[in-house]
Image (cartoon, rainbow, N blue to C red; front, side, top):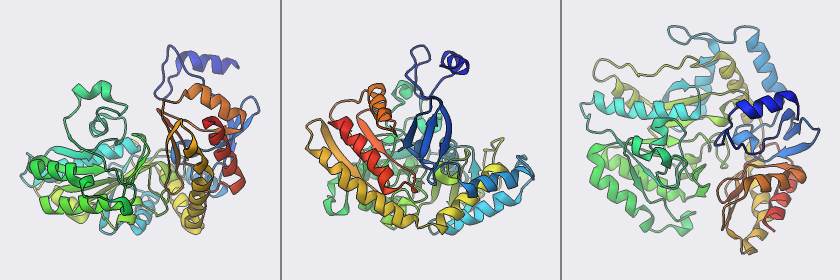
Length: 422
């Protein structure tokens, strides 16, 4: 261990980790393609795409060039009272690929902050209509929307990562998550809990917030597109806004540009992040309809009460523009479809194990759910010995690789996952 690593271990916190009893961490010296190179010389395939954002892999020439060009002009300028071309160009690109009806863009620092902004939009919308009693949110169990306080309030209060704070958070409404994973399995019972809550509480509900089709860090669950269609109809019927959280699912991860497209559902407000910059810099955005924007202005004030210091950072906006261009110019649909087919084929054998509760695949997402919790440190050592980097959590061993992963590279990831299960 080098001196800087000893200092880091003694003083630097890691996500969801103990400072006093730290879990093992592995020092990365560089990254190229889909591989990470550790300080000790070992190379591993990154089956996580750096928490799902590095969809193009690492050290991408087009993205490097975008950062370098923008760096020569300006790295940052405040967005209060000023503007710049990268922000305008990125907003234009986002609205061009977004679901129908999206007309306005608010740039935020991170996915979690974008959820905060989306919630504020919904609350201010109803305040401006003179409906201040509409200040609760409705969602489903097993959800995850971020680590800031407003976002924590709509994460699963029991099985989520934030149960320690449950008594301090705003009290929102949680319906049962649908059991059906596909439309073929759909049963009307899957919407019953949600329907009952919105029928009973719609007068106090400002918005519904959902991760579309795939619930991420709350359990990596997949649910039927029909559920989202039913939710949209109920929101329209009871005059409730619909917030779609596409932070993890956006930019092709589930096989369409945005997961909600598979339901044919258009949101009132949508959050994007993670893959927005191709994993280069932190940036997120909140998109909304003209109705939401104009509704916030209805009381004559019309000031959305949020303004991050690094809002619309020019470097981040420039590389996000380049990332979207690179994605659209690539055969990303074929790549994701090929990843999905390979994951389904090569992880299927794990279903035979008595240690495995479920195996599920959606787009470029492959999940093995174990019966018992995973020993993360032990499993990561095994995976690294096989040249693969994954970060299991709870009972889940899963992969969300970069879209540019080759069949051979992905085969090494699935082989390592199956080996760990055995």
